[in-house]
Length: 138
Image (cartoon, rainbow, N blue to C red; front, side, top):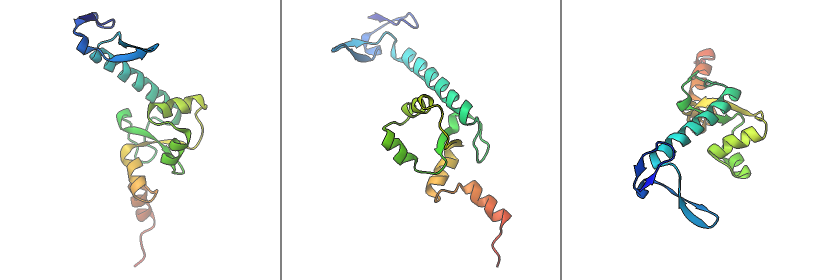
């Protein structure tokens, strides 16, 4: 049995993740549920810091639920850029902060971001708006 330093409950060692420290394998101080809660809170705070800079809503459709929002490379090429700088996920967010929130990024919801990817760089919302503004002449 081991006591979680977060919730204070004694739990079996199977309820703790292992990590390496100075060449030794040790059990983490927090039990798995507490570690998940701490990590989730840390990630949410990091994401909100990024969204506070690049925008708290989708630049295309206006979605504002943070769970649905992500960053978009304005000129495309996000996959290649992340490959070049060798980061992704939370590492990408930390990279943005350490590089002073560089230009060339915007907030999009996952739907609009994916829509741009599969639709030749144009979000389906933008395509609909273009068709309304400039209907095809028959």
